[in-house]
Length: 470
View 1 (cartoon, rainbow, N blue to C red):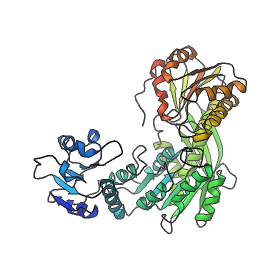
View 2 (view 1 turned 180 degrees about the vertical axis):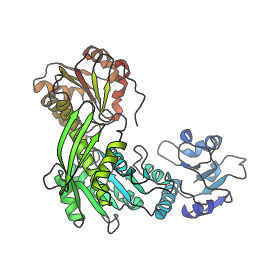
View 3 (view 1 turned 60 degrees about the vertical axis):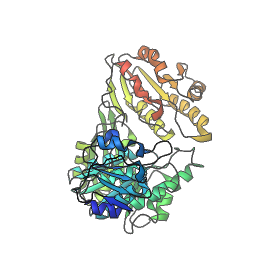
View 4 (view 1 turned 90 degrees about the vertical axis):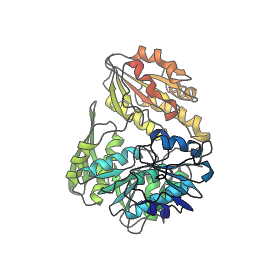
């Protein structure tokens, strides 16, 4: 964490009382006793089902040097004299206030990324494109909500030249609040697509919520960047941030345009044009959509004044896909697995299907295991049926479906003419079928929502899941 004195922290979080202010700064901040590092400042957050005040003793046992609490009567006794204790009305509000104070000390360019799909990948690509130009701070993993974003800010060391935050949402207004907190110089939105429809009326409502990144909370003079292929986002960007709008994508009029894409089992090569300039990027990840993401990352780098070729070289060198995102895994049987099972919504699932069809077009057989997609609301059955149809259109000739909407996916595939279709309640019920499918010169796509945990099928195929799920 950036160095702040204990007295500065007490003032920043609005402590009603504090003790132990004479000690040194805290190296880190934590809200989880299981991941707490010695010397950390521990915030006792209160949730619907858990109250971290019940674990203050565990925090001290793990080495916490400070506690921020809203219930002083929960403090263990006796407390070591050197332990910092701050009492506040609301510990989450205090965490946010401390993050706001740290953000106020940042004097480097800040980029914020959101979108229905690809935001973690885009965040990592932007960071990779900037890496050769200086130290980059970024959101760890997908700490992108109202707890994760303050923790991301508080994880900064203070020596960064650039900072890239990922911002997520589950309800209207959340992105506005996180934009006020992060105060980005560049706000990039990847896409507005069918996701979280359980909480939104339609995709237009999702686009409105994503576009909060470009609203009044975005500081004056900040730049908006978005994908020129997304009509909803383009409409909102032109309305909210017409001055200095930067676009990327496949569209002919994109400021950073993907001219060509070539894929093989080792990755993707993309040629990206900006005016008369051209740059080539080699990615160790598959997907035409990832070539588009690369164009977005170069758009950010160029907007920050970096040379296009240098940013492309940095992106090619430093980008590594997060676990279970369009990764090629090879089984001892000779089967090639396209592991994209970290999460899924209709847009990302269709992109994965298209990628399988393109990269495995010469394979003897193309299979897919589709786990149900979550939070799609009343449209869920119809969207899963359409995914089954899309699988057949992409050239899938063996399909296994799991989860609560397995029958909907299977019905769509069968209606489109596919006969080799099987369903199961849980992914592990497919182990025998997957082992039977595994053979040389075959490809298998794994795609499903996080709750389906399709990575559990890797081990039965003889593939180590040492990367784990982020």
